[in-house]
Length: 424
Image 1 (cartoon, rainbow, N blue to C red):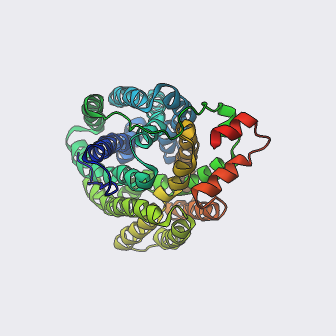
Image 2: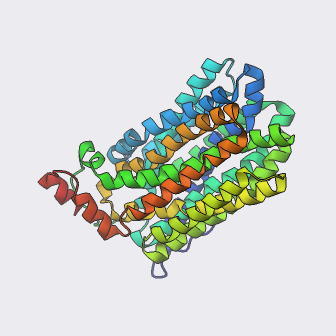
Image 3: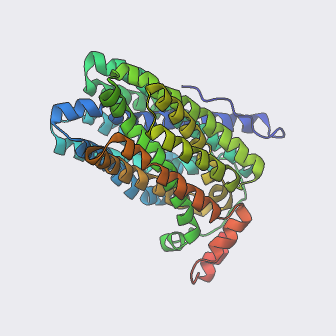
């Protein structure tokens, strides 16, 4: 599962270029499996609903059980990464989530399914901040946005590959086989990361900085504003990921295999937009408002039109436009916090931002399921416009570069002298 090549700065020596590229490739593979594992549930929701007699609201709860645990474990995952190292926590997460993915294939009731999805979410929840820490330790600030954009494009690529691979598998061998197959991929990536992940780059940056207390990080309101921006973005992403396959099947009579191919179209656009957004963010030196506000404006208009599209073709085309425009915002949301956070804050600080997105994953699926049950899928998809509005507003209310971010963090209520010094 190779990642797209990422050229570091021209002056970088060959050994360091190799470190960056290998790190990006391994994290790309880990995120690809991570995202594929959680996407499988969306593709098999109709099968689960039929086998366990679940309405759309309870199907949405199956998805939300994962995000509840995933959200709860973001900050603990950041603390673990800051204390024990990103590599060690990444390996633990890969092993644990692969085990729980395989066990999901043995679920025999709705209650067991909820419990396993919750455990799976906890295992995956510690991975994002650990991954961010691994990347930050092996890249320079100047190349970090592009590197992270390449890594995170794996999510969109997983959204392309997963339906194309899983739909025929489920059609031939049943929904349980999908979980066993993705679990096996997780074990392969675990071995690769264990054997090949390079050592961190030597740097004086942040040397001797005391590790901040959890309270000091959580009191930084500026981080929570970035978390709200991520909440808006992920409301769109997980609302569509969860319910588009069911909508295509129930409203248009599309088979699971055909639905997988149709879902791959907007996902491919998201993969391109994620990389493009990361590179634009690096060139703009942050200034995410210049990307997020236009992107979310286009996404909001496209979502409204998509929700009322009279034809399947119109639905797919408008959905692709919406996903592409929204995905441009993904990496810019991270750019300023990653550049402005001191090394001792990277794990927990990035976890706060990611937490906002996972709360959206916890809220959007059951809300949309309830709206679809009570009204229609058209109303449910219209709900996603709220996510675009939230992201655009937060883009205007957050610092636009690393210096402004650090200044805003220093204005946290009643900071102690030690806290101020550790942010310097």
